[in-house]
Length: 124
Image (cartoon, rainbow, N blue to C red; front, side):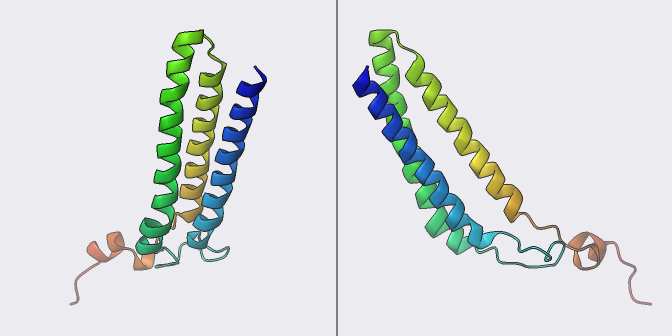
């Protein structure tokens, strides 16, 4: 039991560290205060793809491997606590990803948005 607790704690701490690293790296792309509703912004697809996606894929791989091991052991021992811990960490990852999504979203100002440009009156 003590070994199980130590493994679960180390795995959870590793995931929390990954969440912190992801948020720190993702914060480079967040909308700065006072720049809401302005066209453009700090969003960079290359940064997102080459920096953030590898972090997400690395932790996704780690967590899927952990899930396979946890399910295999849970079938043998009938202990479900590890599955609940895994599910809690997965929910935390979803919340972190959603928080990043909210912080990096930028509305385009109506006068410069494509919707108002498409429906503007043609020149007379």
